[in-house]
Image (cartoon, rainbow, N blue to C red; front, side):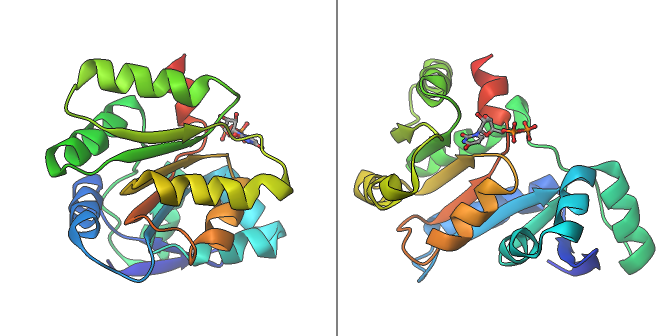
Length: 198
Ligand code: UDP
C-alpha cells in the first residue's frame, strides 16, 4: 500500500478491508519473516516524536495504519488519500479471527494481565467453534523469559500472533523478535484484549 511519512512514521493509506486481504495473503504465503502490522494514533505520534527506538520499531512494520482521525488528516494533508481511520475493536477482531478460522489458521494471543488472554480465547472460541487458538501468554514476563515465550509461540504452530502489550512495548518486542518468530503474521492490538475480556 502507498505510504506517507507522518512525524517519521510511514503511515499506510489503506482501508480495513484492504488490510484484511493482505492478512489473507500473508496467511497463505511461505515467507522468511512474518508480515507485521501496527497502528498509530495521536498518542503514538507524540511517543514516536520523542522516542526513536519506538519510532524505528513501528517503522519496521509492513503496515502502519492510521488509528486516529488526526493521523488520517495528517496523512491526507501530507500525502493524498487515506481512506479511513482503522480502529481494531471487538467487531474487527471478530472479522480477523473469522478469516483465520476460514483458512484453518490458528491464533496465538500474547498480552494483558494473567488470565486475560485465556478469557479472550474462551470467548472467541465460544462464538466460533471452527477457530483454533494455538496458545496464549500474559504480557508481564521478565526479559529472561522472552526466549521461552518465543519458543512457546513457535512451538504452537500459530499462523497469526496477536500482541497486546500496548505501545511502545508491543512494537519494541515484535521488532526485536520478528526474525525469530515462526508465524505468518503478527498484529499489535494495544489494550484490545482487556476490552474483549471485559
Ligand atoms: N500490557 C502488557 N504488558 C506490559 C504492559 C502492558 O501485557 O508490560 C498490556 C496491558 O495489560 C493492556 C495492554 O498492554 O492489556 C495495553 O496497555 P496500556 O495501558 O499501555 O494501553 P492502552 O492505553 O493503549 O490500552
